Amino acid sequence: MIDPSLTTPFLVASAVPVDAPHRSGTLEAARALLASQPALTEHSVYAAAVTGNAPLVRQWLQHDPTLATTHGGPHHWDPLTWCCFSRWLRDEPSRHAEFVEVARVLLEAGAPANTGFMDHTHGETPQRESALYGAAGVAFCAPLTALLLAHGADPNDEEVPYHAAEQYAHDVVAALLAAPVPLTRDSLATMLLRAADWHDDTGVALLLQHGVLPDHPGRWPHSPFVQAVRRDNEARIVERMLEAGADPQRRFGEVTALELAAWHGRTDLLQRFAERGVPLPDEGLAAVAVDVTLGDAHAARARLSRDTMVREAFLDRTAAFACRAAGNGMLAPLGVLLQWLPTVDARWAEGDGYWDIAPHSTPLHVAAWRAQHAVVRLLIEAGADVHTRDGRGRTPLQRAVAACVDSYWTDRRQPESVRALLEAGASAEGIALPTGYDAIDALLARRTSRTG
Image 1 (cartoon, rainbow, N blue to C red):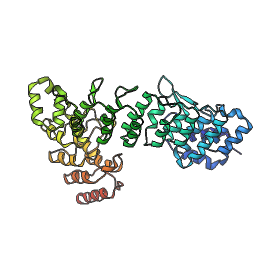
Image 2 (image 1 turned 60 degrees about the vertical axis):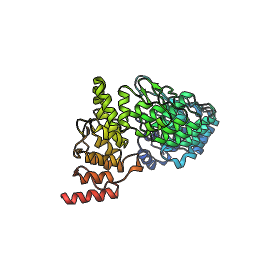
Image 3 (image 1 turned 180 degrees about the vertical axis):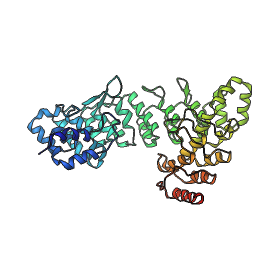
Image 4 (image 1 turned 60 degrees about the horizontal axis):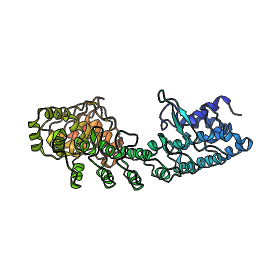
């Protein structure tokens, strides 16, 4: 006997959240309810669909074929929407084949591939969430994505291209690129831009091989190529886009990729642009940024001495400039900027939310967090304060430890920055052991034993 009071909570717990990010939450509540009432999956076609039970879905449709298109349950979704926005589908990839079979049964019974629901949590304008988005951009299930596309699902909404390029789901991207309903130029631009957001070299290569244009902005204010530079992508990703025809001098609003590269201290990118014959700015503020990034202190000083307005504008940007260069591990621009900064601990007022760099961070905070070990040593040698805190109260040592245990840039997870900061007298206060990184735990333990 099913407790009817549990059916609604079970469906809600089994679906992705509709009032929070769809990737948030766990199956803990759904599993607990199912453990207490195993028959909950049998209560309705919606419960069968959301839990990936194809035999039960068939039984319900044999009893009433109209259920394939009937909306119900607490969210008033049809069964295919319950299937594609299932938290079980999202969190148990080993069961993807079961959900593909549920979707196949429903589609063959007449369920529309372009079904979905209206999300009213995004302000005054409701946003449509398609079943394809659930499959491709929430669960990242390539077989389910391909099945929906084969039945005519349209990938050209705002959600599918934006989210499907996340999480390095290259099989999902490949399925979308092969869709019978082709992706538009704007959708492709969104996917390439998002691949740049994720620093996804393989994804970028896959999209460029398909013919996606790196200079086409689509519905965005700038191009995927500009985004790759804005997000400090690795030089090989930028190089791929250059080979695909990207123009470093093409202006989007007030910005070009070339100027961004200069202000981010990307010596490596400016050198590549120059090798390709791209003219570098030779006047104004952009030319000063280029000189600094190429490490030419003499040329920068000469330009600044000739133009008071340019000099003032440059000095206003030195803190952010130094922090961006520090985050990119670029020693040449930092060597020049240290001559102009009012202090080596100059504060980046805004910070950068994309990189989780708090307002009022110093170059040392940024270098420690982004695991730029040579820059950390340079800044310490230049007298940087190893005890200072950023706008969220975090020390450079705390950021260096976090970089090794809680960052995406796993290829740079080494204890060098932690060692350098401890040797410079940094306090380990606020860092709990174990951190999850044995070499760092050993360094911190020795520091604690000496000061304890």
